[in-house]
Length: 122
Image 1 (spheres, rainbow, N blue to C red):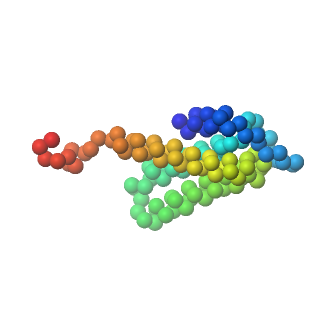
Image 2 (image 1 turned 90 degrees about the vertical axis):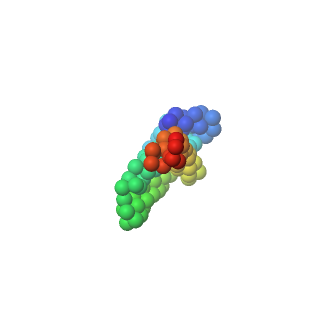
Image 3 (image 1 turned 135 degrees about the horizontal axis):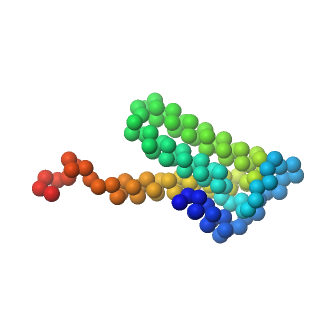
Protein backbone atom coordinates (compact mmCIF):
# COMPACT_ATOMS: atom_id res chain seq x y z
CA UNK A 1 0.00 0.00 0.00
CA UNK A 2 2.82 2.41 0.88
CA UNK A 3 4.62 1.84 -2.41
CA UNK A 4 1.44 2.50 -4.39
CA UNK A 5 0.74 5.67 -2.39
CA UNK A 6 4.30 6.82 -3.07
CA UNK A 7 3.84 6.38 -6.82
CA UNK A 8 0.52 8.25 -6.77
CA UNK A 9 2.01 11.19 -4.86
CA UNK A 10 5.07 11.28 -7.15
CA UNK A 11 2.80 11.50 -10.19
CA UNK A 12 0.60 14.15 -8.58
CA UNK A 13 3.49 16.41 -7.50
CA UNK A 14 5.93 15.68 -10.38
CA UNK A 15 8.88 17.36 -8.68
CA UNK A 16 12.15 17.11 -10.58
CA UNK A 17 15.15 15.61 -8.85
CA UNK A 18 17.93 17.92 -7.70
CA UNK A 19 20.66 18.74 -10.18
CA UNK A 20 24.03 18.04 -8.57
CA UNK A 21 27.21 18.42 -10.61
CA UNK A 22 28.99 15.31 -9.33
CA UNK A 23 26.13 13.29 -7.87
CA UNK A 24 26.86 9.68 -7.05
CA UNK A 25 23.51 8.44 -8.37
CA UNK A 26 21.27 9.49 -11.22
CA UNK A 27 17.88 8.18 -10.15
CA UNK A 28 15.07 8.16 -12.72
CA UNK A 29 11.58 9.49 -12.12
CA UNK A 30 10.26 12.16 -9.84
CA UNK A 31 11.74 13.21 -6.52
CA UNK A 32 8.88 13.92 -4.10
CA UNK A 33 8.44 11.99 -1.80
CA UNK A 34 11.47 9.77 -1.26
CA UNK A 35 10.50 6.14 -1.77
CA UNK A 36 13.55 4.88 0.12
CA UNK A 37 12.71 7.04 3.16
CA UNK A 38 9.04 6.07 3.00
CA UNK A 39 9.71 2.33 2.76
CA UNK A 40 12.30 2.48 5.55
CA UNK A 41 9.82 4.30 7.78
CA UNK A 42 7.10 1.73 7.01
CA UNK A 43 9.42 -1.21 7.66
CA UNK A 44 10.69 0.36 10.88
CA UNK A 45 7.16 1.05 12.09
CA UNK A 46 6.06 -2.50 11.35
CA UNK A 47 9.10 -4.03 13.07
CA UNK A 48 8.52 -1.81 16.10
CA UNK A 49 4.80 -2.64 16.25
CA UNK A 50 5.48 -6.38 16.01
CA UNK A 51 8.22 -6.43 18.64
CA UNK A 52 6.67 -3.92 21.06
CA UNK A 53 4.48 -6.36 23.04
CA UNK A 54 7.35 -8.84 23.39
CA UNK A 55 9.90 -6.42 24.84
CA UNK A 56 10.55 -4.82 28.18
CA UNK A 57 11.46 -1.18 28.69
CA UNK A 58 15.11 -1.61 27.66
CA UNK A 59 14.22 -3.57 24.55
CA UNK A 60 11.67 -0.98 23.50
CA UNK A 61 14.20 1.81 23.87
CA UNK A 62 16.69 -0.23 21.85
CA UNK A 63 14.23 -0.95 19.05
CA UNK A 64 13.14 2.69 18.87
CA UNK A 65 16.75 3.88 18.81
CA UNK A 66 17.78 1.34 16.16
CA UNK A 67 14.81 1.96 13.90
CA UNK A 68 15.18 5.73 14.24
CA UNK A 69 18.87 5.50 13.36
CA UNK A 70 18.19 3.43 10.24
CA UNK A 71 15.45 5.82 9.07
CA UNK A 72 17.62 8.91 9.64
CA UNK A 73 20.68 7.33 7.98
CA UNK A 74 18.58 6.37 4.96
CA UNK A 75 17.22 9.91 4.67
CA UNK A 76 20.63 11.55 5.01
CA UNK A 77 22.03 9.07 2.49
CA UNK A 78 19.41 10.00 -0.13
CA UNK A 79 20.17 13.71 0.24
CA UNK A 80 23.96 13.26 0.29
CA UNK A 81 23.83 11.08 -2.84
CA UNK A 82 22.06 13.93 -4.65
CA UNK A 83 18.89 11.91 -5.34
CA UNK A 84 16.51 13.98 -3.16
CA UNK A 85 15.88 17.30 -1.51
CA UNK A 86 15.58 17.22 2.30
CA UNK A 87 11.84 17.94 2.00
CA UNK A 88 11.45 14.79 -0.15
CA UNK A 89 12.94 12.72 2.64
CA UNK A 90 10.87 14.34 5.39
CA UNK A 91 7.69 13.82 3.35
CA UNK A 92 8.62 10.19 2.72
CA UNK A 93 9.17 9.53 6.42
CA UNK A 94 5.90 11.25 7.38
CA UNK A 95 3.87 9.46 4.70
CA UNK A 96 5.46 6.13 5.60
CA UNK A 97 4.72 6.58 9.29
CA UNK A 98 1.17 7.69 8.57
CA UNK A 99 0.55 4.75 6.23
CA UNK A 100 1.88 2.15 8.66
CA UNK A 101 0.20 3.86 11.62
CA UNK A 102 -3.12 3.98 9.81
CA UNK A 103 -2.81 0.31 8.93
CA UNK A 104 -2.08 -0.56 12.55
CA UNK A 105 -5.02 1.48 13.80
CA UNK A 106 -7.26 -0.16 11.21
CA UNK A 107 -6.10 -3.59 12.28
CA UNK A 108 -6.64 -2.85 15.96
CA UNK A 109 -10.09 -1.44 15.19
CA UNK A 110 -11.10 -4.56 13.26
CA UNK A 111 -9.66 -6.98 15.80
CA UNK A 112 -12.59 -8.65 17.59
CA UNK A 113 -12.72 -8.36 21.35
CA UNK A 114 -11.42 -11.25 23.39
CA UNK A 115 -14.31 -13.17 25.05
CA UNK A 116 -12.91 -12.33 28.50
CA UNK A 117 -13.23 -8.61 27.70
CA UNK A 118 -16.92 -8.79 26.75
CA UNK A 119 -19.59 -7.76 29.29
CA UNK A 120 -21.38 -10.64 30.97
CA UNK A 121 -24.47 -11.89 29.17
CA UNK A 122 -23.20 -11.20 25.62
